[in-house]
Image (tube, rainbow, N blue to C red):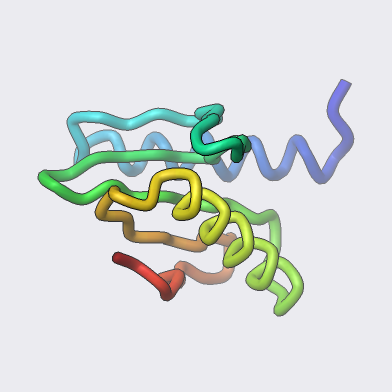
Length: 102
């Protein structure tokens, strides 16, 4: 059974996913990836035109959670260096663009 923090995270992922459904044709949540010897899981992955959107969901805003989201985004970008990727950090309090997009 998941703890309260994991349950809160999953609720935010599901709510964000529902809100994004009308904006994307391709939309996946809890998407595992593995490429170039790097693996992980994306909270929400979406495609619009040539761009791929990486949504990293955190249960609250903090400098530590933002730093972790940036690390996860950089890791995914390293796994797929040829993709056009936009990173988005989502918390209940904020939505921010993760820099370092290609």
